[in-house]
Length: 220
Image 1 (spheres, one colour):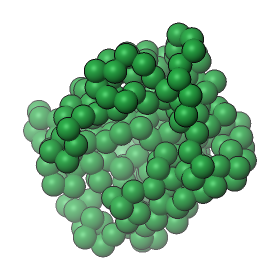
Image 2 (cartoon, rainbow, N blue to C red):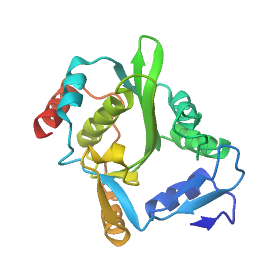
Image 3 (cartoon, rainbow, N blue to C red):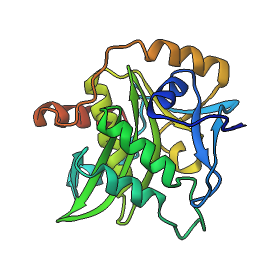
Image 4 (tube, rainbow, N blue to C red):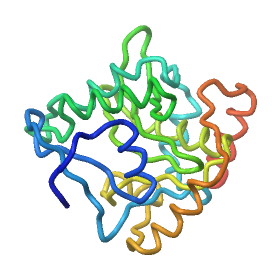
């Protein structure tokens, strides 16, 4: 990792993502960002995504309304909020501002899970060509963030994406078939993916989305 030497702009963020770097803060109140370039990268397979049976049943039951890009600011704020399992967050005010700017430019996207009018889960990330860089997720209701992830994968497949970067492998993400990829191999995959002319389908055809989710259940 390296300390910031210059002002980070949305344009610099995109250049960094293109070569495999991503920013983090040491805490919610930190004023300095640093770049990470992990030796091993977590990658969620878009082909071969593992959908656990119990979660597949929950997805089929549709306990939440799922949307995309309806509440980006709310999602990133919820991801930045303190959690019971962690006293702090790596998402500081500057990161929120930078990703919000990327969202306005059409490069950052959110998936939301709603219970009535209440936002109960979601995730956000950055798209660049056919690569999607997942940043963070949150859940205030059972399986809300997991179901949001399933809908993200379905949308990415519909949009022609080839790479879903999860940054790090975790026990939570392992259940979806997440793989650890060495840095050199990841960057080869990334270089190919960013040249793919994919489009993030925030509002896909409902029937096409339903078919893609059904395909994920069948593959899982």
